[in-house]
Length: 534
Image (cartoon, rainbow, N blue to C red; front, side, top):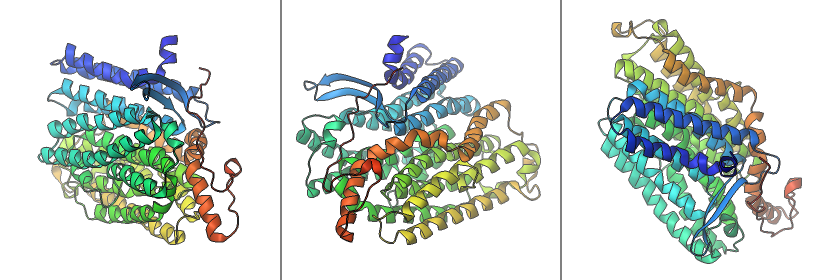
């Protein structure tokens, strides 16, 4: 047991990869065995994540459970994993969705089932590794590794235009990653290592920061996706199988916002402060644009896909409010969006399996024959639009509050007003969609005999509904884990922002007590090697 606990991050990361290898080598043509093996591996990974959740000490906000081994180049490149509160929450989301997604494929997948289960487990290893890596080359390896299984998931098990969608997804994300790789190489030669802590201590000119921030931010903005770099997302969502859409919306999109918060902003704080107004404006445009385009969709899956553009705009706005409150709200919104939008895609998959159509005009009055399905859909839809008491409200409210109080964003009050219109539009298009699909008389006789949710579907959807309600009434479950870590990661940016504010106002700008600094001080978060008792 000590071998497991001392290397729990490695087990958490690579257990799915081990399961994928077992499936590919032992049961390449045994669909049922491959399905239950993948499900068992995903459940074990969730158990490991729960061990970390209950063992993590959020008070210091530092990296814990650190694992570090020299890799090559005389230790300049290391196998370095660690976890703080931000990583913990996103790893927990990934681990929770894993068994639910795999269970949802039990009847939906009929072709190449072992290969799909192996691809999904490989993808889970890459996603968890991305959240835990603290060596920049290791991070880049995991970041790129995500592309391969997702490309195959869309390209093999997707819809009629799956090849087009898969290639577009790959080209967009790969193009942004190339610029980030150039920036990674440059920083390596400046720091002499790939260690994140060494990079945080770099003294870079503003011009260097501007170029490097642009390279990193471009790669992350494509993955979010931030308007106008969003065009790959609707195609990928619509053509991907249900399981692919769930993991894409639930986890992969969060890689972009996570990268902005973890790397682009603290590594290049001067550039981040300078770019904050532009990125906040793009986020607000994305919020409104995504909502308006979702409103005119007739395909339910396309509507949910464009809603992701709008919801992720709130996350970016919260991060670039450059306030701890806005950033914490952004992280909370990542989790809330993963739960509600992941559930929406699962629900769309349920009706598609029964009717093989997603057009709203092909439904109407479904609540009469599918009351359980209609109830779960309503709760999930209301969580997505941010109804108070459900998870979507907390993150959006904190983002708007953080943006309103931001001293770094010009016309922040106007941005809040415009962003809030996105919430109103979200309620309009979601309620409109729900009315057309579920309310009124049964418009098509073919829908009269549709079966309501079965036991397997209840098992998949019930945990998501429970957490949507739980986080809505008890957000401290997550906020208590992330707030100290968000403060620590944002410290370099907060210091630069305070100095800029002091220069504009002509008097000292005070930071919160735990961030009071001398003007001009470059904040470097404490060493990431902190160990905790397990």
